[in-house]
Amino acid sequence: MDRGPAYQKAVGEWLPHADIVFDRFHVMKNYSDAIKNQRRTEFRKASQEGKELLKGCHYLLLKAQIS
Image (cartoon, rainbow, N blue to C red; front, top):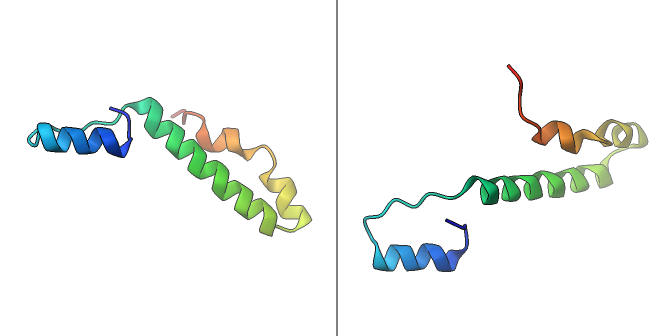
């Protein structure tokens, strides 16, 4: 399900014994947003050298790990 509180409340109220499972799309979107916001914060605090290091790392943080 979507991670919206209204959905969770409705399921909890009407189906109290149901397991709640969040879909991957919404979990990954929330994760991506959290990474993006943290990168922005760190970028603002970084020196010029640190800013160069942080440029382009969003993709690296989110891409699938290859074993």
